[in-house]
Length: 418
Image (tube, rainbow, N blue to C red):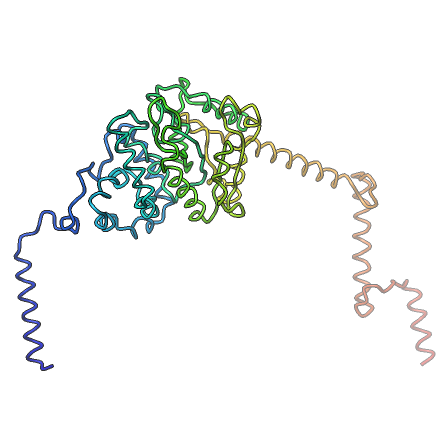
């Protein structure tokens, strides 16, 4: 190719570039404008109103999770690009997931939520939301994902069905918002906690808000994420079980350093079948329901066992402070007191041994200070004498000293023999 034709092409390219630069920018010039934007949702910069009201906890949980979250978790996932691949019906059915499922989870669950089974679940829920009262509120269905991003998970507590009465369920298993009092199962959880950590105090006013646990890496997940008002298990076997099983498996696969899984009741226990128990700790017990808690739940010791295991894997800072449900509360005073008591006993033992060692002399005889000092001085003096005399005998430190008179006679004899 000639240099003149190359220069002409470069010139043409430059002119085209300048022409493009003169064009006014499109107000919606991204890939979404071509495929059609999804239905308007809450702005990305602010979560839905109920999330904000519930709220400060959402922003706080994400800020706390960031310290343990590799930046690559969400950077590799181009959410807009993925949304652009969805059909119009998929975008409509999955708008809740697009708007409220934390991206650390969505990046790994995006394949699951476009399956026929999940889309059928969303079609069922669409009709339920239009004709029935469903709990928790829509914007809270995935609150567990925002309070506990995937990289921050240290403990997973699996529940069953959301609470089905008003002002109870808000997307975290076992948890209720004030002023709703803690339900019986949660009260039993608090009783078991107090057995593990005597300093534990439940939330004031008989409350049961567990967001401080979720913000500290405790994934509070239900097996089924929605329920019809006042109808327990009304959304069971509709597709949630497959989705939440994928969540459990994802935690097992992605958290390489290990996670504690708490499975209470036989249904929860069965869901742990794929968990690698060489890498993770699975704690099983009966459900904390009043119908079964008396059969071993209170004595299971799961909360302390979990923290002991986490301390071995992550160090003491990796433990979960169960006492955080009360502002300024902590259960770690119990452990610190135990540590101080252990240190005190060790110090006392070492001091006693030192005193016994100091009181002993050779052969186990009791040391008398005055007599012992004289004996020590005599031994030192004798050793010094032997050292000096040994040097006179060609450095033989084991030579026996000879009296001066004997030495003179020996010298005379040697001269006579010579």
